[in-house]
Image (cartoon, rainbow, N blue to C red; front, side, top):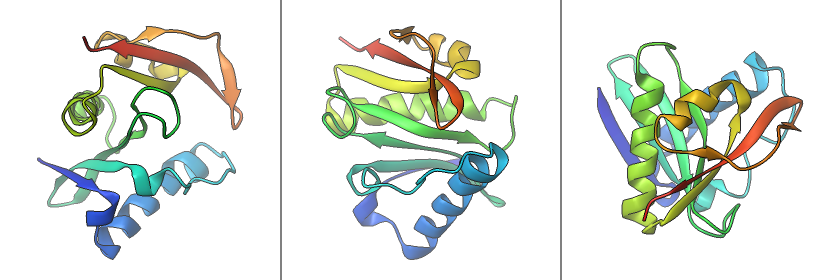
Length: 146
């Protein structure tokens, strides 16, 4: 499995197509959430994914401070095959990318509530009550890195 880390400006048309195809298939079609999945944060982000000979197996986007929250953030976390460690690998890579590319001292995320335990393994703590985002239960979580 190979980890790829690219800023939006470095993505090829084919890579961007695969990213959008994967994100829409999970967050719009599978989860039946009708929202503007492609947004103005994408050009600010580092897009990271794990790939093998079959293509993208996990994905996340990492955003700088001020893009969505005062702190760096990441989201759009996807593991194509679930329960085999890909989610953990992409979360680790997202944290590392926030540290190295944005010198983040804190990361704020909005996590789907069912995934809380995944993020808690890395030290994230819940900082909000549960809320609905596009009809899906979420919580805000933060990780202090310093």
